[in-house]
Each structure stands twice: as C-alpha cells, then as structure tokens.
Image (cartoon, rainbow, N blue to C red; front, side, top):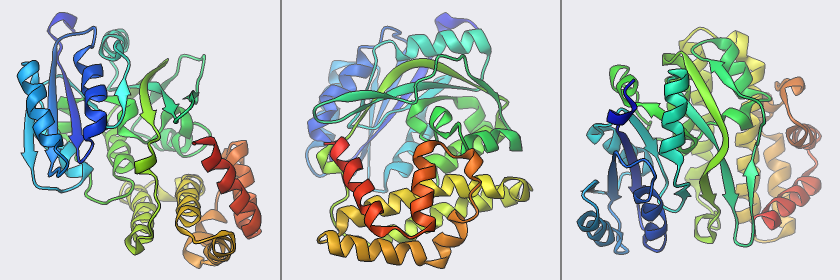
Length: 338
C-alpha cells in the first residue's frame, strides 16, 4: 500500500444541524493527513444548513455538497457511499467532531495490519464533562466473518467493538463489491451495516486512542412520545435474529443475541423514562414493558456469563420486574449526561 496516494472519503449526513456544522467540518478540514474528499449530504434541511454547506464548499476544494430530499441518516450515508471515490470511507455525524489526527493514525494502522476495518475509541461529550468510552490498553484484533466474532461482539466485547459506524473506517471497495448499504430502518441501521460488513471481511483492528467526540446534545435527547419508535426497536431486534438465521449461525448465537438485545431493552427503558409524564407514569409503563412477552422471551434467554456488571444489574431488574429500581437507574443515567 502506497500511503502517499491513499484517499479518505468523509461522509457527513446533515439534517438541521446548523449550529454544530462549523465545529464538525472544521475538525475534518483540519486533518493532519490532507488527501481527503469530504462529502456533505444535505438531507433536506430547513434551518439553513444547506446554505452553510455551500459556503464551506467555496472555502475548501475538497468538499462536495449534495442536496437531496429528506430520507433519513441511512439514506444520506448511502448517498455518500455512492459518490465516494476514496480508498477508505469514514462516517461522521454532523453534531459530533473528530481528532485532527484521525485519518493519519488510521492510515498508519491500515498499513501495519492490512485490515479491512479500523476501529478507534471515542469520547462521550456531555454539557459539562467528557470521558473515554471503553478504553483498553491491549492491542486488539479480530478475525471476522465467523460465529465466534459475533459471540464476542454480542457479549463482553460489545463496548470494545461497538456497532456504530462512526467508530470505524471501512474499505470502500469491499462495500462496493459486496453491495453493503445502510438499511432504511430508523433504529439500528448502523448495527445492520456493521454486522454485514464484518461477515464479508476478514480482519478488524483497533486503535487504543479516542479519535471521535460523540456529543450528547440537549436537542438530540428523546422527549416526545412517538408510537412508531417501539416498532422500530422491535424491527431492530428481529433484524439481528434474521441476520444470524440467514447465515446459519442463529442456534450457535441465540443466547449471545439475547445479550445484545438487552441494549435495545435499555433503549426502550430510557425512552419510557424520557417520555413519561411523572414517576408514577414511568413506573407503570416500565412494569408493563418488563412483562411483555416479545421482550421478556428475549432477555430471559441472555447468557449472563457474557454480560458486564452494568448489564447484569439491568438484566436482574428486568427479570424480576423491578420497575421502581429501573426508574432510579434511568434517573441516574440521565443525570450523568447532563
């Protein structure tokens, strides 16, 4: 691999993120590695984001702006894939930002390992604080495309590997050759993309340095009840099962899949907490949720040996339908992110 000729495609979907755009795009344009194409996809913004993107394109010739009707983040990312000409592709959310050495360090790792995917750590940035998520001192590498990898992903190494596209850099050619795209479901599209990409690849490696800043913004938190949201969670949970069944590995992975589905149950609990009127309403809804057969049949099947301490506690509360303690757990979680 001739490192001097390598190009990174940076895909950034944008929908009504005007107040964060300068921070995000500046962090990309300021990369120490300069051979980039920056694809800004305006997904039908109505807050002036599109015009701001056009202004950025005048300032940096590496930027291409694509304006399209609103279709969601998955559609916008697929648009970036369709237009990408680089050897590797990076996805960044418009309200986040990245370390200036991201592309430089990722390229070094690709050259050292010839990997199909490079992962990196990330900061979680709240209003008054930031912290590293899932730091490790070990040099981590995985052989992918097999059931054992998914056992590790769905179990204790979930936090280390992750299922978010923005903690990874992918080979553009592999995406194209295998026709891998983000599904248009509203929840879990990153996970589906990463699961399929891992099946089609051979090796993933990780950089033990936080290179991405994931920002917890007040306007991105769920506040309003949306009856379609629970349906999207169910689609996400079923899509993981379908992925395994289609590849003949479901029986081997069933208890591990139940473990990763605990994360979807946690998302539902957070959603119930944020959209409930008061504590009594929260407790009542959580009590009902923990008794619903769709969810209960899945979290009861989780292999506790694959869970870390946080999820063991959460699993216990679900199994015993401890709605009051689940409410307290959600309260603690959201206080931490303020």
